[in-house]
Image (cartoon, rainbow, N blue to C red; front, side, top):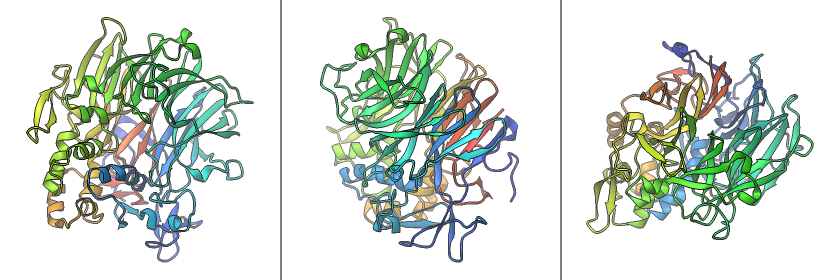
Amino acid sequence: MKTGADGRPGEDRRHRVSVAAQAQPDRCWFGFGEPTEPVGPDGTCREGGVLQTTQQYIWAFTADDRGRSVWWGTTSNATGAGMATVSPDFAAAGLSTLTRPFHDPEHVTVEFEGSYNAVHHVGPAQGIVGEAMPVQVWQYDIETGESVERTPTRAEFPGIDDVVGLRAAGSLGDVVFVGGIETALDQGAQAGGTVVLLAYRAHDAKFLGWKRFPEWDNLKNFVVADGRLYFGVGLAHPGDPGTGSGPNPPTGAVQRWTGDPRDPFRFEEVGRLGNQPAYFTVHHGRLVTGTWAGTGSEEAAGVYVSPPLEDLSTSNSAKWTLVFTAAGFFPDPITAGTMVSFAVTSYEGWVYATFGVPSVEPAMTHHIAKYPQIPKHTLPHLALAYLKSSPAGVVYRIRRPGEADQEIELLYGERKYWVYDPATEGWTRQDNLLHQDPKFGAGGFDDRWNEYVGWGAAVFRGKLYMGTFHTARVLRDLTLNPETHLLEEVLGHQVSNVELQLLRRFAFPDERAAGQVWVFDDADSPAHPLTTTGFNNACNWGVRGVLPIGDEYLFFGTNQGWQYPAEPRDDPPRRAGWQLLKMT
């Protein structure tokens, strides 16, 4: 294999980035409706089998308290799970749902509920998420460079087949937590579900046990602040009006760990918010969190600030302050309502925060569902609705959040956004509600397809690093791919392969473009790219994990939705499966 100037997929020699660990091919596929098999001892398949790599996301990501090892949890076959998540939105918009199996040997196979596992009720793959494989837990020893799988056995964790994604991880003292979600059969791993926490002893990786929390229906990140461990959850049922922070009934909560290695699953609630707290940072002695819509939420995603850390308690759980939301920025209320807040990061006196549309399509399908007169039954009409409703990711920052003289500054975004007017049945451009020009550039770091910005973020050696999800990979290699027939299924009629190929080449000419990482050197300068090619791996559509180990190393955890190629390729450089990358 030719490796190219940057090395093998996942390497970036110019920036001292190397592959610390890589998901390996693990299954053999034998055709629609046939059972898959584990790869053989020699890493190959028997005759007729197609080698697949099914573990694709580093989703949960943390380091032990002493910075000796990195821990992560996975989710599998993200493409099929993602399609399952968005199918209800397509149905609500009067478009067809995505259930037609396809096999593209260059990218991915999706069987939905026609898979052998779904038909024969082989967990965790059932219903529309038929290709899901069991989640995994991994540990990487920084000193030795060795990676060891730490997934509990079914005897240790009988509920493992009910967990379709491990989405959050955190560590304090001698305990490492990895958190996952159970998901309904008609939804994918990106949807919510009952939270399950796994606990390990950090010094020897001993599995301490697990526990279900049916009162919680999602979680995303942990944070350590002033020697205490916190994390955010969605509430399975909204709280009563007036019992939480902000103007709306609480649909999310902040938990603080009160346990120890002998009794790890003890927590106390120190925040009740109008939305689910997702990402955290510590800023001037307080927690700051960016939110996602919780179950039953009526509140736009935004940013909350806690009371001072020393005042955090159950009795003060309703005293967090909502300081900004997407409804205060986007002029179109539907677009604002579909936004989520990705990373919030304290940097040089500011809190850097972000907005983006999750799972690519909700802003488009929600507009069409509310206004069925929006044209949608041809490829040009659907493309226009998508482009006007779904802007690139926004980066902004807040100084003195929650104070009377709070200051908000737009860094990357647009002065004007499209707004749908049902009276004229057309789209008009209106000022963002801050009435600001972006300080540094257009949305997505001047890249239309960076719809998630700050998917992960961290400060390392005095610089702020932000990972993105570059949706060009999804649009080019799934939506506009003739092998998948996705547009034919959504639109309900045949779409010319010539039309698809021309649009692919016109809209996405760079086959190497993939997940990106952007770097702010200081608060006064625009960001510059560390990578725009998924670290030389076109399969890496995003970088959610950004994890510093002191000033020595910066680790990245990659995300993708491909099973193929199982071995490295150079056309463009790519390889399927999650990657743990280390920058020195």
